[in-house]
Image (cartoon, rainbow, N blue to C red; front, side, top):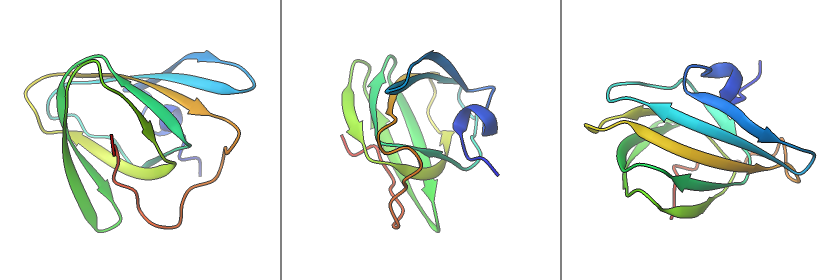
Length: 113
């Protein structure tokens, strides 16, 4: 079963660019929206809006408040999430293909930016 976010959560993720080195995803949601479990390879995240999310990995979760205009590194990870704020989320992910298919053994509850 694929845990590609475009396949598991097509209402929220869409590919906006792809070549042999990177894949660029756009993510959007509204307050109350949830995603099912999915995986991301090593990525760079750029927030286009401010938002608040709860990220779930394994038995744990982490709440994050992110401002618009933030850019940061995200290590490969598997999680599910939910918009727990009062504003829509709009994010760009630049996924690196060099490490495609590798997910760290421990849960990552990024973003750690």
